[in-house]
Amino acid sequence: MTVDADILDPALADEGVLKIQWADRQMPVLERIRERLAKERPLEGLTVAACLHVTTETANLMRTLAAGGADVALCASNPLSTQDDTSAGLVAGYDIPVYAIRGVDDSLYYAHLKAVLDRRPMITMDDGGDLVTMLHTQRQEQLVEVIGGTEETTTGVIRLRSMEAGGVLGYPVVSVNNAKTKHLFDNRYGTGQSAIDGIIRATNVLLAGRTFVVAGYGMCGRGVASRAKGMGADVVVTEVDPLRALEAAMDGFRVLPSVEAASQGDIFVTVAGNKHVLGPQHFELMKDGAILANAGHFDIEINLEALRAMASGVRRVRHEVDEFSLEGDRKVYVLSEGRLVNLAAAEGHPASVMDMSFANQALSVEWLAKNAASLEKKVYNVPEDIDKDVARLKLETMRVRIDELTAEQTSYLSSWEEGT
Image (cartoon, rainbow, N blue to C red):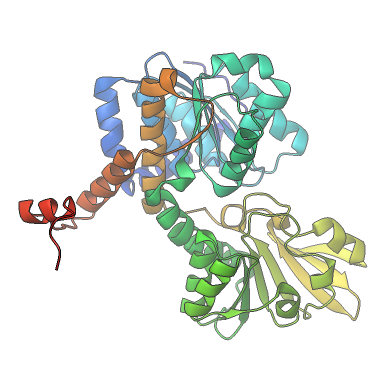
């Protein structure tokens, strides 16, 4: 079978298949869902366009959708997150069209998005909202063909809720990011471990004894802060939300305005989901040797344009490290061009945590296929029964058992008459 694709090197396929299989062994929930979908084929006749990080975990999600009968095509949601061997493995080993090459320029990146949309999808899957945005700005005539979509990450959900509020969202979208079995685990434990992994792989620095500044204390920021603290770092949190700042303080972290933290930090990680979280006012105060990394979805959290304008010179000193020479003979180091450090400098989230996130993705696509006709053009949370089913399956695969309510307890919880 000849599969349409745009990948770096088909010769990487064997290595890619082995890695996909390795990840699959760490994703037992998704495996169970794939086995059921293969028997029931609830996605028969559906065309799915996915714009996600092209990793081994994503590969197993694509296999699951295809097993359910869907015609699937995949492109990358970030220019530096593609694993080229995984792309080749999906194409050659599983006959799934992939349009993704690590390190593409903006022109080819968007050409790949257009390639999956050229397949006339009925369901979209996004990580950051680029596919949805392109449909609504450049392919509006295709909106009538789309019955629904899913969104994986916080940044994309922010975009979608803005579109819904503005009355321009063209079809229903499920916010997979808001599933408890996604954001409480993937965002916190996945980002926490993988961001630290990326920083260490890129720099080989010791975290113990360093001042580690985390910009943003959402679920991802919580994870990064706790993992850095666990490795011996002195962690400072910067926030704009008073509730999150209060939580960070009560979790035992120092909380400072970002300008004050700028002069103290040795390592900075932005994970706020916003623009220019670190800018000139911070760069001018940073120590010689400060390391800057971004774990948010887009490369706008660190104002690199301003940093380049301030620098007298820029050079690549390690594979994922750029050195900026600043006034006062100071050097500041930016990792992975300000893109997602956990995917650009490492391998992204561990497969065992993506098992839950992508189980939610697969089940949400099935839910859309069954319910799209009755849904409004708005953002939906993952249905609670799906969320709980994913948690139950994960516990089973971990061989963890829990209690069940007795009849007496169930009756008590549903009654208002029994008091003290």
